[in-house]
Amino acid sequence: MGELRERMENDLIIRGLSVNTQRSYLTAVKGLAKYYRRRPDELSTAEVQRYLRHLIEERRLAPASVRLASQGLRFFYRITLNRPNVETEIPLPKGAKRLPEILSPQEVVRILDAATSLRDRALLMTTYAAGLRVSEVVRLELRDLDSDRGLIRVAGGKGRKDRYTLFSERLRAELRAYYRVYRPQRLVFPSRRKSRAALDPHSAQRMFHVAKTRAGVSKQGGIHSLRHAFATHMLEAGADLLTIQRLLGHRNLRTTAGYIQVATQSLTKQISPLDRLLLPAATEHR
Image (cartoon, rainbow, N blue to C red; front, top):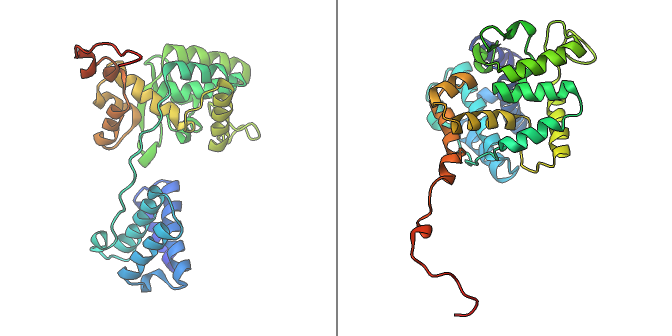
């Protein structure tokens, strides 16, 4: 794919797509070319559709993985090869809509308390307190922490967009204690091996999983669960969707509105119609 790959990489970069998205889209096109052992620009729409069916039926990829492959192929044919009608020819498979398992405030406390070091605790607390993605918390710099205004500047978030989020008084106290011990120079959470390099996101994930296991929390999900918990707990506390959207850096309000489905505080206050029935209590024998 030499020349085609260079063209696609250029198209991805100038449109500001994230490094992870670039890698995923390139992998999708590479997989297509490998499957047919031919240049992807020589393949017909029917062949592309058969490849997607192969991913679904034979490789049994998850709906989200097939959808990502479809998005990568659509980008390649629509942008790089300038085939404008490709969006109708390469449909996006419907993804399974599964609600995340939301950590309760009590479970968040247990996870933070179970962190194995002051550094791990500070990183996990920052992720939850500010609603950060793991890629954002590991890139956080000391200059991004604005104590006077009570804000954290998230530089180059998803879509390479900057935003501000909360810098709570409780988090400020925690980070001051962390700073006195670790003395980071530029990055808040630098790599242990290279002080000028950012911590590997996989290391942050391990911190979370170790703490979650020690806390005895069995709910599914990685460190991103803390971001989900932040949004849900904010919503349950009465914050409006527009504010939460700005804090999370969501491009579309519909993404933020998804948290309405997992915010349970208003649900648990409701009374089931069964409780309103004048029904006699059950007896052992009827």
